[in-house]
Picture 1 (cartoon, rainbow, N blue to C red):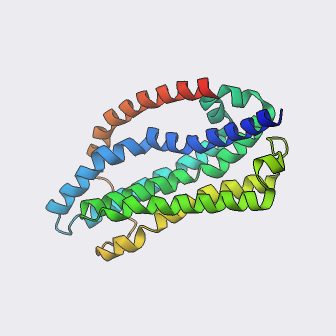
Picture 2: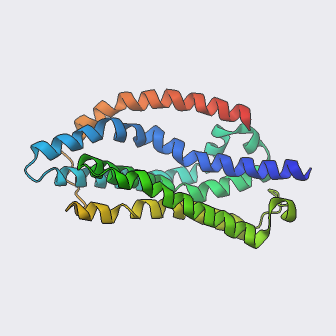
Picture 3: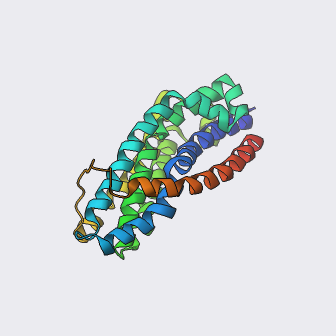
Length: 240
């Protein structure tokens, strides 16, 4: 029974942890990587300012879109959990913890997108290192978070923690810790952008600067990613 309870707690965490990444990939992730990067390179070569204005427009557009997305997903968290794992959603205790974790993790969608755009801006300028190593910071924060959780509550064997016994403070610690990892990962990109002479400036003059055309090109990639994620949903439903 203890092992089952621990397993259910792990399932609730795993489902919540997967959801932000899946939502990000389904919405803007695929398009950013496949379409907007070539556009960034083109603007660097063709635009008089070396593509700085275009990059800032893209970054602003992504920030606006990804600020609204987690808020909407936060309201739909119970439905999202059920879509990813019906067994988790069908158990009230497990579902409650999964929804709580999901709502803590969902803002990470914003920081995933910001990190990717800033990384691609750097890549277009021939700086590849930052995007490769900054995820290490995310991992370090998560390791520290898990270590702190174990220090406070003990190991799984010692604490006998389950979905019914994990306290709100424990859920908050894990939730904020996981989110903080993505925040640190994104913010760590800013000094590298400044080294290239790039300064972040919010630009809302999107019309007539090629973003719409790039978005149309991205739709095919998004459809392809959607098909792949549909398969992932089936696998997750069967494994939880």
